[in-house]
Image (cartoon, rainbow, N blue to C red; front, side, top):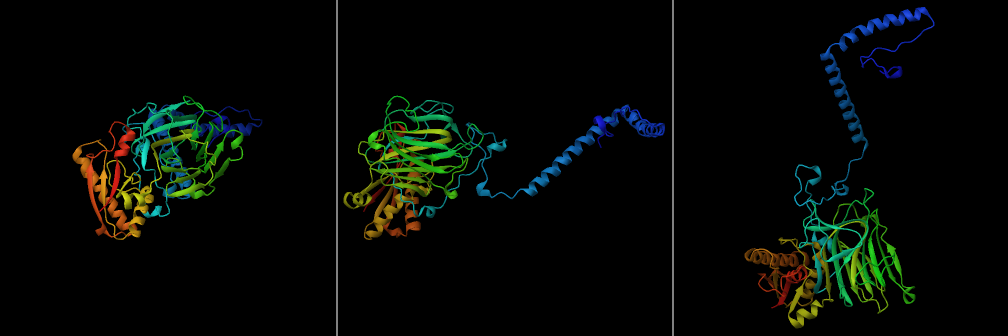
Amino acid sequence: MTLIKGTSFASGLPFPKYTFMKRSALYCLAALAFLFTQPLAAQILNPKKILERKANRAIEKKTDQAIDSLFDKKEKPKEVPQKTESPAPVPAEKPDPGKAADVIKKDTLPGLQLYSKYDFVPGERVVFFDDFSQDNVGDFPALWNTNGSAEIVTSNLYPGRWMRYIGRTDIWTDSLLKLPENYTIEFDVIPIKGEEDRMAGYGFRLMQCINVRSWDGGSVPGKAGFNCGVEYFGRPYYRTYINGEEGQDFGLTGFKDDHQYYQKENQKYHIAVWVQKSRVRYYVDENKLFDLPKAFPLTSVKMDRIRFEDGAALVSNIRIAVGAPDMRNKLMTEGKIVSYGIYFDVNKDVVKPASYGSLKEIANILNENPEVKIKVIGHTDADGADAANLDLSKRRAAAVKNELVASFGIDASRIQTDGRGEAEPVAPNNSLANKALNRRVEFIKL
């Protein structure tokens, strides 16, 4: 109970003095003051009583907070686990298990059948690869350049090393890319909080640059470009442009205004861009979001750089491969397919769902040619022990066979498996791109 001027019964402080017009009222007030202040004064002089009052006030405060919290929880709807935001990734090599933000959340793998409409098939030869494994945590990545800043971090949510950037900054491939008419670009991305303490979105740009050794500025930088990504609230978008008079009528823009395709903070997405001459297809996980048959109708457009920009994200596993693989012709006439489209996590033998497009192509060939038998051979790079790599390559080949049998109905008797580990490299194991070339799955016609 609070009285005028902040004085209360619970405080143990004397009441303020007042002047009253009527004597009878003064007498009544004096009697009440005497009645209440006598025990209070005694309590003021008793340290034990003072400590008891402080303890009681603390208990009452905690009780009130607990009750408020209880009602708050009752009023809020129960959260759906799939939509719960994960703790933000942290740039630390060894997360502190004592911190709530460092609780590891397993990256669950969706079933292969989820990708049943996924038709993406990566190029047959890797020309650029970066998972930042050669960079130190805290450093700027060696193969890139920037007009701002970025750093290599690790995450308590997802394995590997990631390039983290926040704000209005661009990070581009330092050397120019030599890209033919047909090629594919893939990377993993995790949208994170930006400078305004909320998801900021991110941008990815495939472009034909003007400044070979520097930054191309502006909203439509370079000579031409394909820009895609997500807005701060998660909606995917794209834009194509060709600068100059000859390309002024060829610009395209669009977005996917469907909430099932909106990206969420701290969740990992696999992005794939497939370029075939003037056609550009854009995939996020198992979904093809955009298919632009005339994105770049001018033969003068020749892309030579990629960059990440504007927003906040973690990026890794960037892979560019060239050449449209003609699997049917290679297997039936040359007797061998070398595939870089069968994906596994590091040191694991579980086929990732993004492999569906390549596996489907193999299965189609086998279904159309029922007399054909094949041997699946796994290969690794030279990282790790020889014996471990040999065992891993054998297990991966067996996993590919199991998927062809279980997911595509191929007769198991038509498929043999083997593994060669690191024994048969196709390139020196001296760079990330060459190591990516050596990590492959071969299909041999028997």
